[in-house]
Length: 144
Image (cartoon, rainbow, N blue to C red; front, side, top):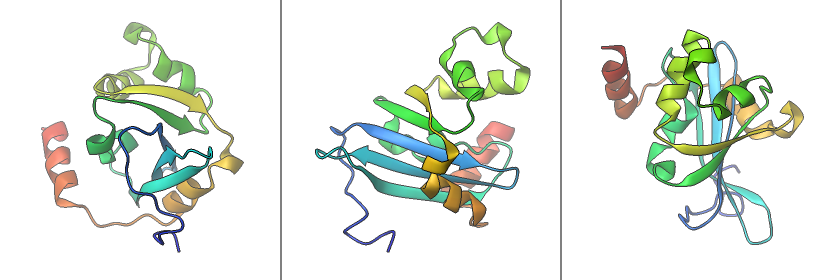
């Protein structure tokens, strides 16, 4: 049902775009959403997989969001101000690394309560353990 034409939308680079992501210590779930004329958020692409040390939702959807404005929705409230600031020296090292990787993009970051993050929450709870070829290449680049 998640990939039926009634649910899944075609990507439109002119529509407002949102990445809703959720993660646990074991997996990540994310959905690329676009806001329709009636205000509804319709999914364009889903991502779900076991986490690696370098996996991030923006990397998964980079072909869609590179060079454009979009919103990242997270239920991790303390992360929002860290991702909005440009003062890298005040961040813990692991957040600095994540923030520097995110600088390739132009996201707004918004806190959304977890109970409203149903799609990414469901996706991270059942991650896919198969690495795509592009993810393998990316992991090799980052880890070397």
